[in-house]
Image: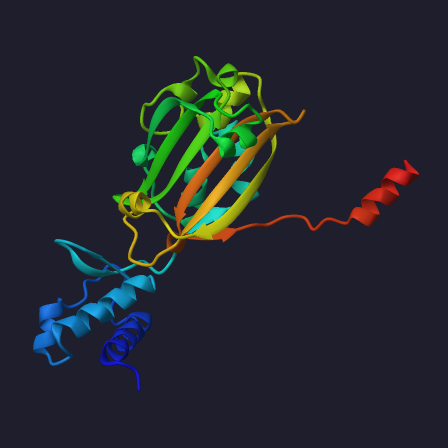
Length: 266
């Protein structure tokens, strides 16, 4: 037989899925459920913690326990980097995700700090520079309204970005079109990129910064951006709240045998 807190959590979860508690609705306070005979304070508290760990609710002081939105933000794949978005318009990557998700946005929902840092092993390998080299770090915190969604820190070689808007810490993207437009204007047009993803347990600082519920993992992104000649112009590390994004990729399926046949007949 399941413990009482588990039975209570499952019953409330079913009510959430059935729409009895809509996204953004506040669940009854612990005291109210205790008075209604749903169990002891410890039982209700453990049930709510289980719902939070399962990504169904968030609990904060002063606001109680709130049902989380059902739909995660689309985190687009290659289409978020379409040149027409940032070169010819002003739709930088995080805004492209919001547009695709049908969600509102404010450019200043991205804040940032810019510093010169010594490249550690990961950064040095990503940028192709010696360990300890001084590089620019452009660290962004992105929110949806007041809710943090992810961090993204881009690292650059100084000779690529010195004196550009990329090293300006003003909130929001680095001017019209953002960082990729800045690189384009400086003669470094991006051509291809590599992304690597992995899930892990967040650090204590990440839990606080991203306002993560207990037990929620993060998805770490490593992105390397190249020009057509293979020059690395950005290496970025992103930390994403796992339940706040739905990762979406669309790509052409390769056929290496066909390509080799074409090369042989050329």
